Image (cartoon, rainbow, N blue to C red; front, side, top):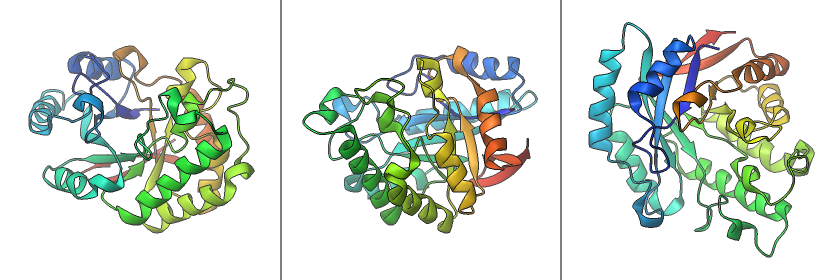
Length: 266
């Protein structure tokens, strides 16, 4: 596995990672491609995820040139998608020549599942249904992204045991099928996000059942990302991701350059 396509640095409000150390970690681990995808979520609390895009893009362009003989750095962004901000998000993305755009759901009806309040007074099942329906709405209404990030992100933070988080696809199958079919029809991809594995969880975001179903429905575009917020987690648990890809029938994964996907053979 020679590409990590979901990484955060000090330009994200939840990371202090030095950009050079992140890039050097990828090089040391044998990566040939990487994308730094720092956060932008409009009007998140205290503005902590509003990216200084001008400074970010200028700095990453410099690093892209500085390390071009060692690794291909794609300049990416992870945009939190919310209906209120579609126009602002589209304007931001369209104003820069990004190589790669992750669309993600972090805030649903004003609440982030990272916080326990999201789960108050309802079951995990109902919370997941609301989360997946919000993804469907985003896909229906917004097109300016390449891959949808961590499709079951909510489950990372559900107030249940790690074993209980291992849901069966059938429980949410109708919603997932709609999501995956719409992504495929729009020429969008998904990612295997290995971040939960570093926290002692058993499954990636999304889990193997979702990845298998995506492949069965005809999905072809898939990236792999660690969601690293510090250098040591770049490429974390990528052997598991490779095994998942093979198990689902993939013979490749993808990287992006100039918003165009490239197949990298396994």
